Every structure is written in C-alpha cells, then in structure tokens.
Image 1 (cartoon, rainbow, N blue to C red):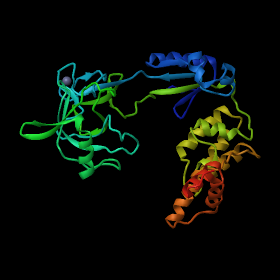
Image 2 (cartoon, helix red, strand yellow):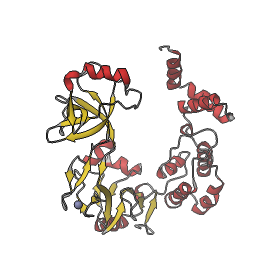
Image 3 (cartoon, helix red, strand yellow):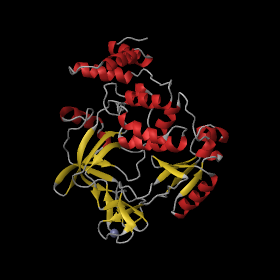
Length: 377
Ligand SMILES: [Zn+2]
C-alpha cells in the first residue's frame, strides 16, 4: 500500500531507501490518519538504551506509525456506534438508547471467589464456585444460590466447602430472593481489598448487549479483523546501513527482519517445518533490496532450502557466506521434548538425541533434574 521503488515492506514494516522518500512517506501516513512517533526522541529512545548513532548504524527502527484506537462499541438494541469506555462495565447504559450494554453477573452466572480475610489465603487456599441469583448493585449485596459447583484444583465442594463457609460466617448471611433461600454477601460495585468480604477470581455467563467493532474510513470491521492497511508499523531508514555486506552473521539480520529467531537451539530438532514460503519471500525482499547478495539467485535458492529450524538456518547462512557463524545454544526445551517423546515411546532422531544431551547439561537442565530428584545444589 505504501510501497514504491524506495519503500519496501517486509513483514508489514517499512524500509525506506532515501531521506526524500521518507519525507514523502511520513506525510502520506499522516494523511491516512497514522500517529507517528520519532524514536530518536529521548522519551522513546530511553528504554532502548542506545544513542541515535547506534540506532542508525545497527539498523533499528527510527519511526513508529500507528492508527489511533479505532474501536467502538456497537449497541445490540439500537445498532448505534458508541464509545468503548465502560461498555463492559456492569450496568453500563448505551448513550443513545439507554439500554444496558453489559451485566457482569446475572441470574445463572458463575462466580469463583475466596473470602478476603480468611487465614488460609494463599496459593492453594480453598475457593468457592457458586451460581449467582442476583446482584443488587445499589445496595451492594450479592445473592448466591446455596450450592457449590465443581471447578479447578482449588475449588472445594461438599464438606470442605461447608467448613470454609462456616469458618467465614461473619462475612455472609442467609437471605431470600423471591421464594428462594440464598446466601447474601456484601459485594459492592467499587471493589476494595481493605473492606471487601470476598475477592472474585473468575466469573462467566455474562450478559452482553454490545459488541466491539473497528471503524476505519467509514467502514465497520469486527474486533479481530485485519484492516486493509496495517494498524501499526515500524519504519527503518535503510540508507544508514544498506547494503549489508556478506559477513558470517548476515543471515541473523535477514532472519530478524522476518521476525525469526536465528539460534538453531531454539527450534524443534526433529526436522519439523519451522519456515514457510511466506517467510522466505519476506526474507527475499530484504536480501534483494538491502544486502549485497544477488536477489535473483536467492529467489531461485530458497525453495530448495530445508524448512526445519536448524536446517533452514544452516542453508540460509551458507547462502550468505561460505564460512558462516551459526548460533546453536543448548536449550533445555530440547531435553524436555525428547524426554516427553521417550515416555510416549516415540523414536528420536540423531539430532534430537544430541541436542537433548546438550540441553540437559545446561544450568537450567541440571537444576531441573536436581529438582526432580529433590536435591539442592
Ligand atoms: Zn443503544
């Protein structure tokens, strides 16, 4: 969309070849509604801990363009587009028709919680999961059906739940809603740890009367749809560093431009596919425009590269340089994957066996095995 002979898109980021092309591009982006951050400015550069010169020479992104928040609520009662602020807050009303857009807890919702001041508060403290009858927000009282539902590891039922409830009897009372007997707990809309009787852990069964949409140039998209233009992108000034020479590390820059890790140890070692044609094609654009390598030759070569992580990296690295330096850090993940396969009776390749042994010999690997055996260092 913003590409031309001096602007190349790689993984939706933009690499610009000349200062003049950059000026045009930034003006274009502004016109399309992007907000642009100058990453040379102290406020943005601070976290990266680098000088402007380092950012330029190392080829870091120098600009960041993003569309403003395009999300709007869409009321299901009247169909209006409304502000997203508070739209998923219990009892929030549509500013156009006045209908409620969302209730967190309604009759039949499930709530998991703990008593706030129970002595047993901690990682494995008991939790209760119960069905909601009614949340009276005005009085700040939550009414629950007096039954215990099953849940995760910490959710207690039966006698343990009764005992937990009894131990915290100063935090609730019996009540009734209609003809039904319920458990009443003070639970206000503005939850406050210092005064709250319970702390909610999770809830589901909400009432939704509103969806989230994105609106761009007058058209509606669903919350997770991709817009025709990127919602954000990094912009690189290639003239500071391009073309990159054919060094033993060049493949790392190419992989990084395509968002890929260049350490062989990071990948599965059983030959499974890690690289896909789309990623090689993005790398091909980078190779053609920003390295001294021959783009046509690369286009012809990559379809024959291996697609596994370690194989693909080796093939790319050897294309870039006759004597490349390829990172292959031992990785405990490879030891764990191999152990899992052995337990399931699956065969291991020679590469997997070698990398499993290397992974187990790392500090993390040794700690892990000592942990299993219950031994301290
Ligand atoms: Zn409405």
